[in-house]
Image (tube, rainbow, N blue to C red; front, side):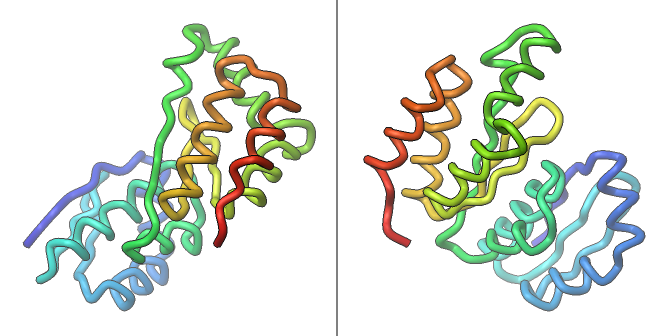
Length: 166
């Protein structure tokens, strides 16, 4: 079976340089991977593993580091991508919204990650989350609350009420 993932130009260049990343993904997934132009080509026997590797590349595309993206090889972890354009039409508003999710010196993003045991990456016009399903849903709702304009204290209370076990 063969699948492809379109990469950003920046990520395609980076993956060509970091051959050890590709080798690590290949070793962990038992798939053959090649970077052709701006595409990651994934070949392997198991369709489910190929789809998981595809998610790893989607996560790398959204700005995650390799270690965070590799969680997606585990069937208990998922990737969710929130489009900030749905909450703010202008570039300026989108920057404000991303700033709300990041918080002063990254404090809000870090708080959400810690309370939900997830990884969050803010890249371009998206906010992406990697985590176990229940935790990911809580983190996603907290981020949506911030994007909808809810106060940081309300989001913090929501998180404290909805903490999911690891």
